[in-house]
Length: 194
Image (tube, rainbow, N blue to C red; front, side, top):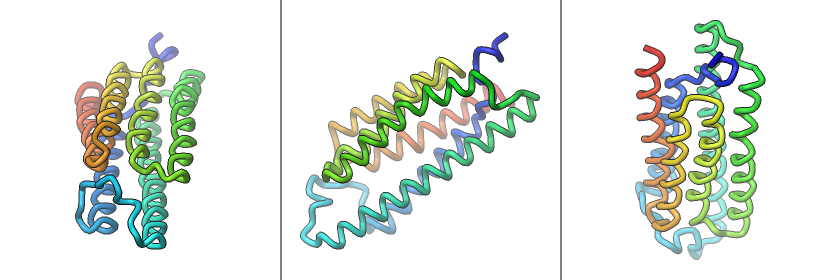
């Protein structure tokens, strides 16, 4: 009965590897693009060298898309693998509702982030990523494990803190997309997959 109302193929390994990919992406950005600086002062993206800043913004955007694609890829891979192991179908009415519930806030947030990007409101991009991702998880939590709902609440809280303290945006990003996913993934793996 639970299989018909909840998506049970979500793998803890998805969260674990998504978190590791997020941390690797953040480390790459900090050490390659930002010369090892974790803090982003208020005027960081409005430096005198506009052409250099434009190049940096494009690199950040490209890297963010790569991290997103890799994280989604491992999530799909491990969820598909788990569904095969459990003998469950991955594409069901419940999984479709889960994806719609997840992607409405994600797409809305993505559009807002593009608006913020083009209107030069850089300090709001990381908080928006965390908040809208959290809203998507809270929404999707109705169709899968309850832990997703709580992960969403933690992501929203992290995003709000990031909005209050934008200079620490990268640290909040690492915490929200990296550490929280790793802890969540390990907990889910131990609880449901071992």
